[in-house]
Image (tube, rainbow, N blue to C red; front, top):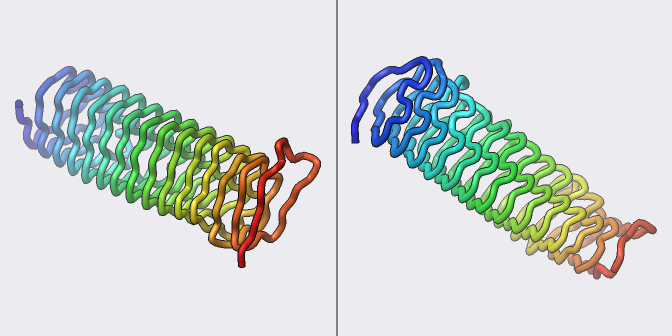
Length: 281
């Protein structure tokens, strides 16, 4: 492997199509596509300032690096990435990628990040301004995660999340096969139109959660003071270890809670309209 140490690059395609290169302490100044169409790249303690540095890259490891705001859309159409101990200050990262391991990474501006990515593992990751995060992605494994940003995980498939704090309006819309353990989820309209959304020991807050869902399961969850009009037109099996403000027109299944402030069933309830609702004090 060729080693490039403490070098500076700029302009377009500075290291186009290189293979088997280790970059240590290098800086990539303004420009485009510095490492496009590359294979087997290692970047350690590097700074990226220009746009699109890693496009069509196969096999790369990024450690202790910084992506400045100008390095937007830095990693697209690539595969087999390991990224650790890195800070990303640019939006629109990670598109159309396969096989990502991201660990100890902070993304303060994660807008439109991780779109159409598959086989993704996140460990100890924190993101903010993360509107439209994880659109159309699949096979995602997340542990120890903090997120602020709306409309996240829409259209995702096969997701497992553990030990997360997620602040996101419209999270998990149109998802399929998502399980969340031991996490706190805050935001309006959680999980609408989802299939097989499974929440275990989670704290949930926000208006009108978990409506129009199929195969919805809650195990030993709690619901906050904003969780009104829950479960409308949902197929649900829920055990809730707290009160629920109100439940509206659940379609089928069962709901068991400590208390329910109001159960609303009206002419708009859909068949089979046989959800069993019980409370325990």
